[in-house]
Image (tube, rainbow, N blue to C red; front, side):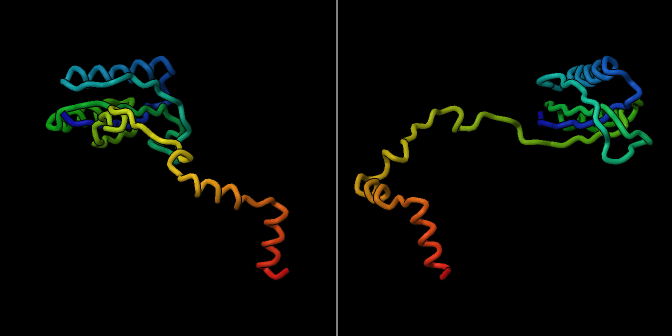
Length: 143
């Protein structure tokens, strides 16, 4: 199975409940065809940057799912047959896995602990007041 992202716009002619039901229908369809979805996203009504099929608003949905690559062709045909979807795109993505950094806790030192005492003392001595800094800048710039 591969990891995919489906982004689609649902017709604004539907009300919110119908758009949510349609989104659930798409998720259930993926599961029926042997895929897996993590969650059913809520459609969000958005203004489109340009008209799509003469619509200036639509419900936006972004769905991540696992699906067999050989079934994607049939899935796109089924999406084309649905009249409520005005535009969609399917992308393959890297499967989200726990990184090694998340699995193993990393022991970190504070920066102060890793700096030798001599360097720390030097840094403290080099701290300059704002007035002294302004004088130095004027001196350098020749004002």
